[in-house]
Image: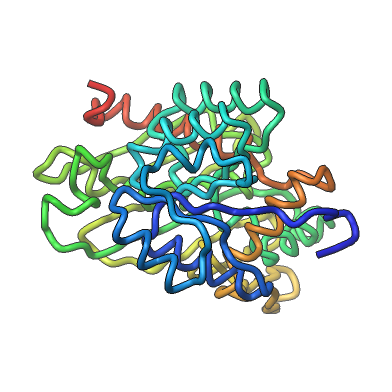
Length: 329
């Protein structure tokens, strides 16, 4: 853990779905366990606690915020519940790592960021891209200048989800739609490579029968004239593929949300270089370690500013589309 971590931080999970299971497994890779679990359905929380030997289960969710033994709360509940949980956690002096998308809109996030600063707490979005060792390594390559300046980013993310209008992907009451669920990855990927945030955004959108965004094409440009095209779909599979094209070569990454491998094509030498670092299955472990570094004051690499930039872009896009979630009506 490194010498600086004088204390072992106690994590609580709010939610016990897929991500919460991965969180518990990630901690166990370090020989640790979650301290507590809170969930809307108490029975599920009890079953989750038994599965991972978690000592504390709250009968009501609110108790996790007031438990003085809790240091960090990982929130992995539906998007539309995030802001109220984040605020309660921060008001009670808890650090927060929240599943993407961190909030519904830029205004909510602004409110949360302000509260975290006020209370001197770490608030961060659990965006895997920002924590995979591969991206740190690629950053070194980019900074070295061998590839020259960035020109173009191209990103795809497509899932095939059954047309069930009650599931969270298409349900407007659960802030469904492509943008908040998968678009956040593509926009975060783009933001990682861009040297400045995009300030010019164009788009096309196709709506699902429920009125949420099912498919979108997004075109971005920033002050440095770096450009990006993003293709998102919720009812058609696409490869999770990202490309960052530089003057002297391009970087290609498949399965980029938790990538452990990238290929760099060097144009002038006409050669291909494969970089492999980190492990896909350790994605949540990297997030945990970075979060604890930020809290201990060792180093803050949580990229909150990127999360803010991306949230502003998503809010601007939905404004263009006239798409409001139930909470925003």
